[in-house]
Length: 309
Length: 248
Image 1 (tube, each protein chain N blue to C red):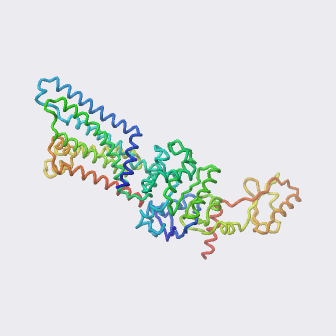
Image 2: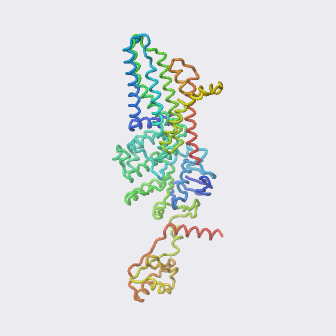
């Protein structure tokens, strides 16, 4: 269980996060979604007892992160963004070292069990220096899972993994998330949607939205975006499309495409296609475009300001 | 205690997989060995050999000079490297106290140096065989106490510097500079300063001075307490530096 209350952190005069308040319950996977520099890592470092907040407080696994930091650290598994490994050690030595630091009874059995879980059992005696990026990531995760922590905090855990590894990684996290609390950060929207029960969108140190991925999706996809490419000059197509009922914000793209939006539920695509062909254009491409993360933030921040007023 | 031991054991093992440790060991045995052979050879070929058999100081003296340079090399990576590799974040989020981490780090280096010091015991053994009367046991204990205390203080200063800097080389040179001050420079002003109270303070702080007294076999409490308090101070400063890092 994680309960953060008004967390604020200043680095010198720069405010990294401001007044973050949120909760993550047991059996819940909560995603921290935001661009680089949004304050995700800072928040995680505070929750793991790496550094204290400037203001605010938080409880992790029932203990205060400042006054009972050691108790918190006992119950948290943490995978930092830069996977912390000692390359001069073997996989087994490294995990045994971590198990000893955590005073685990029958440490060696726990290490073996965790290595099986992340499918690295065969590499136990290999040196960490010789591991690939994906394997290093898995050892980092093994280190965080070793003591079966109540709370698992993962900072950008899937960066640098290939697609197959990402799928594996997600399965492990989903498994763990059934009984324990998982907080993970990512800047990949689809990942947050697939993995998390709840998503916190954070931008410039503030929470700008908090919802289930489904609700968030519904809120964001208020309008659908489509681009069209034709043979020849796109600016001739623009007035044709603009005339059609339900087409919004039709505009020329720098790459010679025409982009427009329409409200979900009022699909104007067939009408647009018919009109284009009828006007004698050769239709080469017709596809929906997803909102980029930047656009989502823009949209969310604007939504929030509007609501605020 | 257990955490200190876990950290120390890792550091100790790490030294055996790093070239620096072997270079330090080699340098120590080479220097001490050359001194030893030359002095023993010189004295045995002189007529007055019987009147002044060399003592254990011919082993410990050169060793101290080697350690002055070796200690910064051994301690420079202790915390600076953890910071660089990102593993400090890992250690600082495990349930161990900052003090335990620092003492463990220092202890790992100290145990490694003790191993080297232990191996040099072979020289006094040879010396004991060579001289007809045998070497003075009291001086031997006192001299080895001196080098052990000195090493503890050197390494603690190095540990502190390694926690101040993210860069290993900065840590190395900062340590070396401080050791040179404590070992060679502190006594220099006493040659020109007339003020006795200032000179007393400088003499008190001069590590070399303490070391020489211990080496001569006159063990006094303050000569033992001074390097010990220097060690404690270094470790304390190091723990503060790590604590400060968290607040930044």
